Amino acid sequence: MSTKTAEIPAVWITGASCTGCSVSLLNAVSPTVKNLLIDPVIPGKHLNLRFHATIMAGAGEPVMQVLQTTQKANPGGYLLLVEGSVVTKDDGLYCTIGETAGKHITFQDKFLELAKDSLAVVCIGTCSSFGGIPAAKPNPSGSKSVSQALAEAGIKKPVINVPGCPPHPDWMLGTVAMVMLKGLPGADDLDYALRPKAFYGKLIHENCSRRPYFDAGKFAKRTSDEGCLFSIGCKGPMTYADCSTRLWNNGVSWCVGAGSPCLGCCEPTFPDDTQPVFEKLNQDRLSRFLIKTRG
Figure 1 (spheres, rainbow, N blue to C red):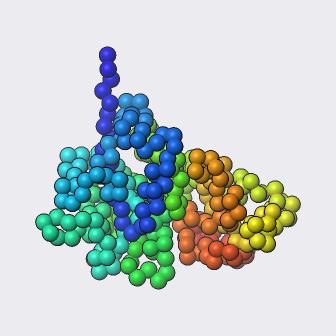
Figure 2: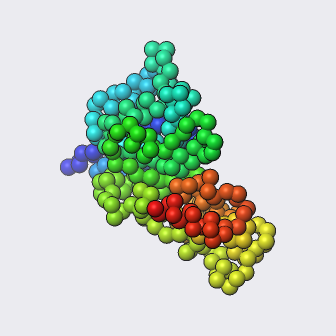
Figure 3: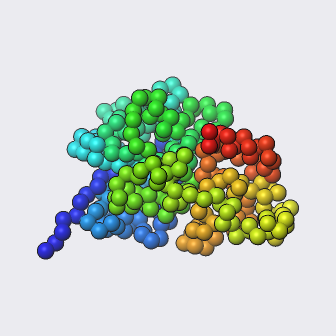
């Protein structure tokens, strides 16, 4: 006897971003994006991704209608996946998501409309999670994080942040899979920045492959040198993520493994307080960072 598969509707919308999060998603290996879209990745449950402007075949008003139909047919029952920050300057004029009846629809308006009826909002990438590069000083577009935009609109919805510039494919798929398997995460499942502890539970510095050099006091002066990269700007001591153990590109390497300092891209204050890239963190700067991010 066959068991009916439960469909969990989801829509992925993109605001102020470079679309790098979508590109990273397409690099998923196990499961692949094909598995996610077609197969029940979680036994008995299938994620029905109804809208993703970057990878969907449709375009124009018919696909805008898909957003409307999903919202009306599944009030409080669909996942809203958001890539990119929310542009608010001049009523969101500088970031539109499509047209209906010849009228531009701003990302800000459509996001708030969809968020009100969603089950939860999953922020994909640092831009949606914390504002990211679009919200960096001087922020001429008035870009804001999803949480900030929701709070200012008086909309209360569960928010899960999956930051990274871009986030690892496993973080994205793993977070969605956890929601499908266990339901919405509780307070103990998320850290102070609403990130899943399963992926952002420890500092990169704790499990860095170059940590023995740090402990031995051997520091690189150039990116090509052997040694810890702390002296040339590594932000690993203040960045929570599992890059150092998960690795990227199907386990090939990661930023520090390739000779680059960690940029701190998963943190709430990226990029304003993690620059310059190649400047060593001093104690005052690290203390300011901890006060900002941990309150």
